[in-house]
Image (cartoon, rainbow, N blue to C red; front, side, top):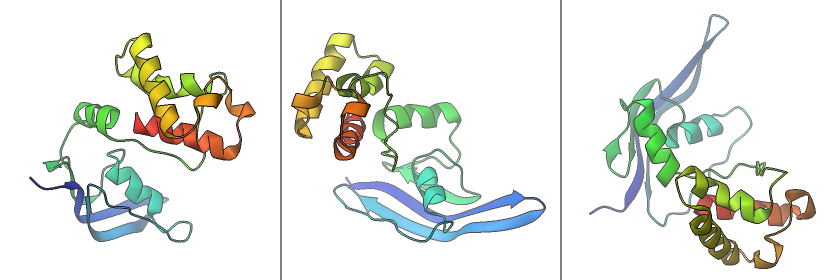
Length: 161
């Protein structure tokens, strides 16, 4: 069994705007194995977000193939991609996108509740996950009461879930 999580094969992406053909990605090959630490950097407009959206199955490449856990998603329908995204893919945005009316605990519980966990199960799992990011003592605080670093750790906890 391979430890390959993501494989991109000859990925290209073009956008057509105002009668212009804009080539964003060209012939990208990439493999990411379980446990790899990968950094993506480049100037604004270089295609970083486009590549991430393709890897997270949020966007379709113009050409090429996208594999996640050895399954080819290049021709998968939206419901198949939705299922994988809801259970196996987490995205931590630069701006953490926490819900301001909910506590750190409630923000962490949200993905679990959306995936059918009972409130009790979600609360227990969220508390355990918040402890992993050293936020046990801040679980009842709202995002506005947390430092930027603490907000980011809530976002990480939510992604771990």
